[in-house]
Length: 157
Image 1: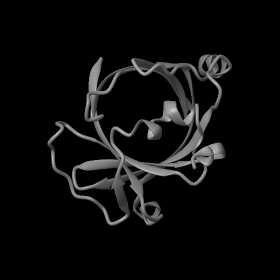
Image 2: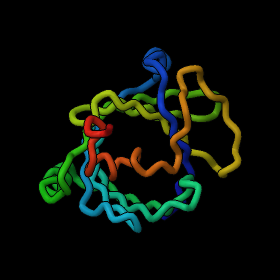
Image 3: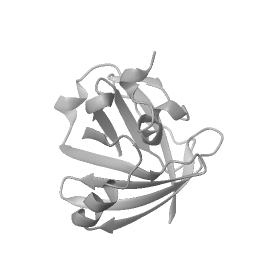
Image 4: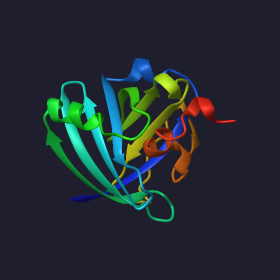
């Protein structure tokens, strides 16, 4: 169990791709997307996980997170029980100084949405922002994956 401290940003252009050191394919669904807690099933390339996340603090930067690795077969079976939309995306990893940005390029019903996240040690930790980083959306619930599984990006007006 741990506390997750992260900030989330929109992405202005695709120059992060040339800076990335790794790319993964992610498929995920939610068994529960209640605002008090979410239960996520995620397959990342050839590994799978079940994750429980608690409610975010007021700023949207900190929340409880528990994660356990499960077999891909178990994850595939659990995804059959998932809520409405399965989220698929490519994740690019970009190292900037001592931090790693995870840039998610969404596919399917969320195609066109590109979001970058950075995990921090403390809420007030400073970090260098790459030129491709856009406006901050930390704490904006509509950008949470659990929200995107209910109302896809292509349905936003």
